[in-house]
Image (cartoon, rainbow over all chains, first blue to last red; front, side):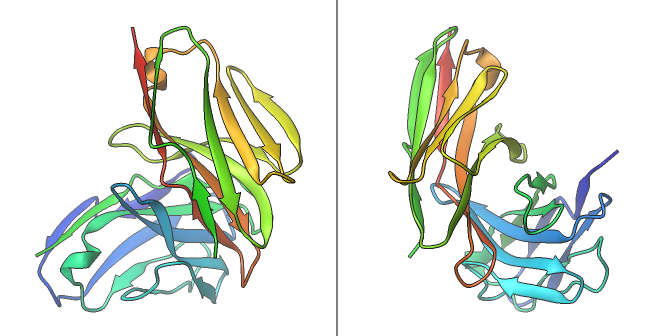
Length: 113
Length: 111
């Protein structure tokens, strides 16, 4: 089954404790993104990657890091989480940068206390 | 900068037709997409307009006017299961290949 998976689905952590949210897709997609969703703000793109070893900032990259060492995986790293990073995070992929249909993972609900 | 505007809420009755508008401002426009998101779920792709005009997919249609920087999603024969949030999104080629989403329109379908 074609899908995007994220782990963990729920995470409660404390300020400053490094964490990684994993994202994996099995569709051989080139383009992957991370978004955060906050009430009233829609989805805001954090980082995206157009292919292996190619990443670029979205609209809200501060406080986040990403890597793309393999085509299928695109982890999101919070080196020193802060309460303002409490949010719902979605990973998404699409075939390539010219394609428009994005497939979203189930989401990760992160709470930073 | 880049921005999209859509109404925050729309209410309609079952069986009716509803239109959700989206106006955008971006300097590197490259297509308008629509996504649906049910409570607790992930966004799912509905439709895409790269050129002016109407695209139809079953009960859903989407329209784009690039000269007006405007598009809309039309939902016909509304069903209770259509109650969800709907997001318009643009791909922006300015400074890369970002995707910008609107804040979303919450659709309530009443019996």
